[in-house]
Image (cartoon, rainbow, N blue to C red; front, top):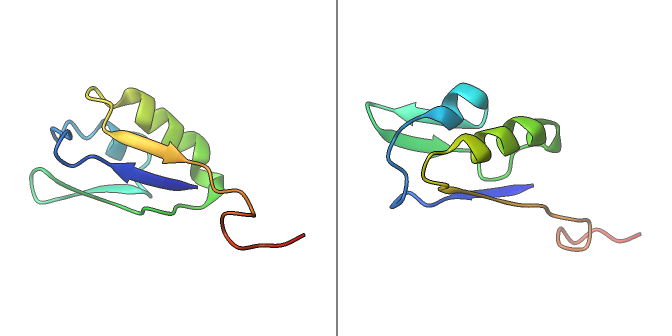
Length: 72
């Protein structure tokens, strides 16, 4: 899984931090930092965080094996 946050759109409401604190963090008062490639076991938390974002600044992209360079 790969995520991206539009930091120009983000307003620092921090709903994502409350719902997926292993992935999203606030540095200081309003600076959001995040893990761009969290483990798939965090998928549900990240999806909930994306839905809860009041400005819809979080985009989730699922990486399948082909995109990661894995072969069958």
